[in-house]
Image (cartoon, rainbow, N blue to C red; front, side):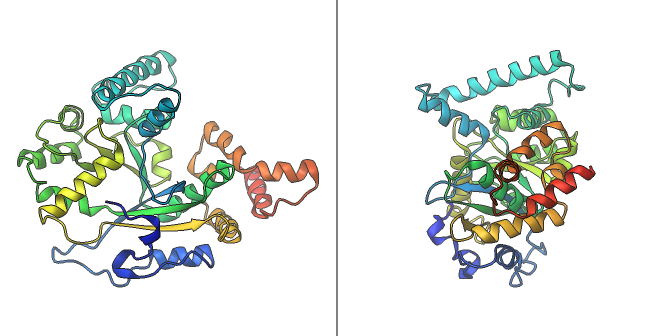
Length: 336
């Protein structure tokens, strides 16, 4: 199970990560893992990253499908676990139909479910996939950007790190109760076998417990490529993403299939780190990590207007907004 935030600073063998100080300096220390050498298999640990908002005392991984279910529940529309697959299928079919009719771009093959899931995420339709990046700095940008757009409702942001190669190592050992054919299906999915993806992740054949696995659509869109992105896909849509994640790794540990660390997190309190977050956002812009470079389309430009709102406020009122990097940001936008 994921650690509560109160104990997250003990990650990676107890090396402390404090809440105070310069954000970028702390973040680079977080990324520096001098104690990590090649393990017995000869593999060097590889990490993937995701930026999130902090809304409670425990960081939780939620897909857009999970978030949609939570919103609907607040309005009295509760979907039980046994009906979630049916709801996902309906969303999937409706999206396919409308996408083809729109003529926006060439649709992928109808049976390529993974690519359709990725398109649903691209167009902000509720989907089971969860975005990660091989770049920790892209994840940090996403975390701060969400905090800017949140309007002060969250108490901060965080970057979650997960060992990428833990998934392959774990599945090579075969989760308890899963037949050996599971590894064959995973190998076929790596080779972009659409039927194998459907069999494992939609129909749950050869699975007796949930799994999580990194996936990449065969037709990689430009946005995903620029963000150095990939997706984590849960197998059981009747469970939340977090439940899939916890059961997968809990089962592996219980069976003695995995002993090492696979998860880490660094958090930034919005009050304690306000100045540091501003400077970090400015430095990320200088590293060419900002809205337009990561979302190179009209939709991305429109979304960038949200993070530019403090600048518009200063222009309109003459009051200083305290985020000096917005001037540089606007200058860069004018050069595009």
